[in-house]
Length: 287
Image 1: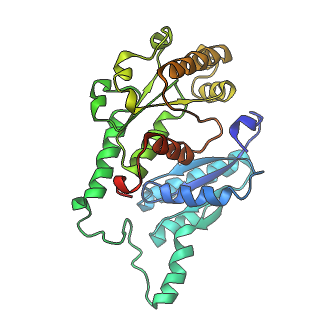
Image 2: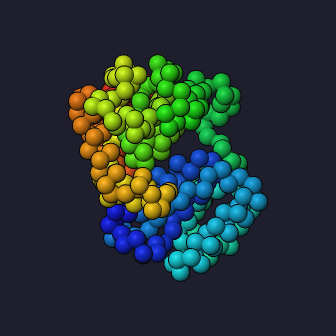
Image 3: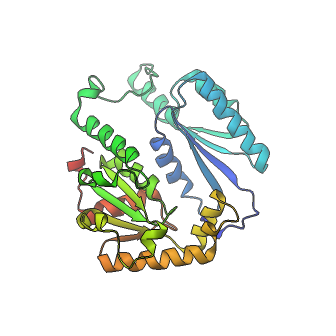
């Protein structure tokens, strides 16, 4: 069930993904499990880098606040390693699903050994900053963060992918997901009012046509997303959203670039579509 199907007055259950790192593992496992309950309605929130007791307390308070607000017990998917931080999380008034222990305990029994319970470890972690693939991923994340939302478009020569679309269509989360999971340097450009007064995409984008991928979104969900950001604004009105979507899609067709609708599509699926459309293989990206 998607946000576009919801009555705006309905208060949703909150699903939290809590991690002492980026939260991608918690999100991936959590969303996979949630997909088995397509009739359920909820909103999701990722709490990343919960790696101290104080941050665990803050996370617990946010979970409890969500319960007070909705009256519906939150669901928490956790990959916290530290037992004390996990214990604080489990004191929350929520359904806690400890994904880490679900796998660790059987392994401990099999190996006959207690696990290290150390944050951030992976096989071959020694000298991790000297690992070429790991460094490539860090560089991609740094590039994508510093080239978000139209920043430094004069440096698009360095980009592997350039995402373009109207404001709030999902460019930023897709950029970061591609960087984190595929080690791709991704910049994204939101079409401005000035851009939309013309018939074609800006020249500085078209000169990188081979790197361009367009994202679009249906009008009503776009208006809803924008209203959450700027209530009662022209920016969020159905009329403005309809105009922007219509013009941008005509631009994309004219430029003959790949276009993906983000309305009812997960970030994971959008990213996979982009990788496939651009011809990037998993192996060449160090994954």
